[in-house]
Amino acid sequence: MASTSSTLLDTNRPQSTKEIAERARKFQWNPLIPLKAWLRTANTLSQEGQSYLHDGNWGQAYLLYMRYLTLVMDYLPSHPEAKTPEGKKTLASMNSSLPHIATHLENIKPLIQKEYDEWLVIAKTKERRQKKQAELAKFKKPTPYEERASTDPALSSSSRLLDAGDNQDLAVQLAQREIRRRDATRRATRMSGVPQEEEQSRRAAGFWNNWTEELANKQAEDEEMFRRQMESTRSKLDGGDDGHDGSRAQPHRDSRPSSTTASRPSGYKYPAISKPDPMQYEAQQSYTRTTATPQLALPPRPPKDDLPGQNEARSSPAHASLPPLRPAKEMIHSEGPISSPQTPHELPTPPPKISELSVPAKKQQRLTFKPAAYLENKEPIRSVFLPSKLRHQFLSIASENTRRGLEMCGILCGTAVNNALFVRCLLIPQQKCTSDTCETENEGAMLEYCMKEDLLMLGWIHTHPTQTCFMSSRDLHTQAGYQVMLPESIAIVCAPRFEPS
Image (cartoon, rainbow, N blue to C red; front, side):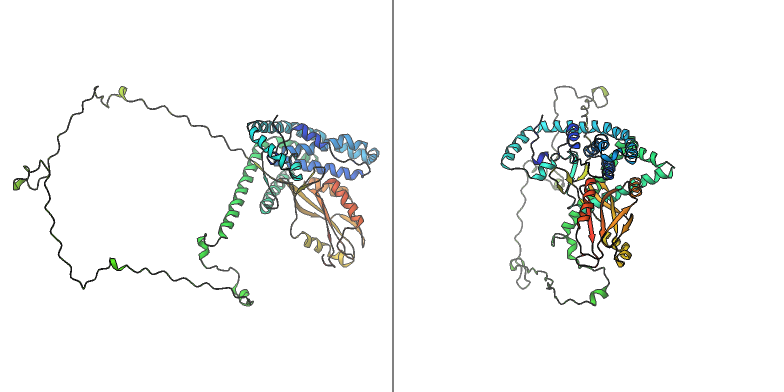
């Protein structure tokens, strides 16, 4: 087996199904946490697995589905609240989804094994290079990020790894396109009159009908969008260098109204660069001719000497203007008879056609954004994208409660696309608000809505109308419940009457 030392080369090494299954079973189980928190965690695992399945990230989808299976089958039945009538009913509904999860695992397993076997073949051909890098690794210790990334199933060798912080515009464009595609699929399914339960089963099992074509089209679109983003960035960088871009020589025309610039004169005066005069070239005196000095008569040309053998031909005036005689043709004696081109059987045989080498098709690579960091237990912390107007819109909704001195909370919901999380929905649940607390009510309806709309709970936001901006002990306790479901869960506190808010 090829060497798997923790070097930069092995950062995106694909994991085998055995390695992924072992990692899926490694999570902290605490029966003291309420059962509803673990049920939310199970739903989050199922939704995340579905998102990674549509992205073609087989390793991470296999990890999430395997962890869901382990949690529902091995741990939840032993929870103290699972013996209650409500707990038994909830577990029975979750057990009905296990066949779909098992179908996904059976279909994903050969894909992971194929990717792992392909990597082994490539790794064996690069054994010498790996030995050199292993020797360098003895002197250069890999960073903790590299050590954890080398065992991350989401980062495989078939992915083009990108930094989400350096490619924010590209990440948002990919997420918007994927969200529109998923919404269109859900609308088409609901317009056909399919019940909600059957819709969930179709969403789970119907993926494998034409997944190869859909995934290939998605990866091709991702590559095209990435190429356009790189060309746009390159053109901006090239246009910023003065002297290299010819368009920079033209005067810049401001598209803003002139009244705004004229009403606000600036006290700073920019230095002006005078236009250079064109260089005048003066002719040298050695090449000039003056008309004052008389021109001397040129000497007569010498007579042309006749070529030998032509004296007799030009001796008479009649033959003086005749051209020289053509030389006599000499016969070329060939060893064999010259074949006539009219005999088809004696034509030279054409050379054999060279068979064109079949150019292998370029393997499509899916775009995957690297995690921002890793926890001590090697769990990745993915990048989270927040809309810039989220806080202002929430404060506008909560303005009435703020005026009355009451808190208000909202749930941040979103989607996972290309190993990054995107907040796309602000959900205001039913809640009971006081001056220093806000508790959500009817959480079952909120979970049902998120499952129906394929939304992940990525965190929460609430106000402090009478206090400063900080996380109270009650807030930290609430946040711990969210991080059980999702390690990347975020909490936002807004204090509109204080600075910073």
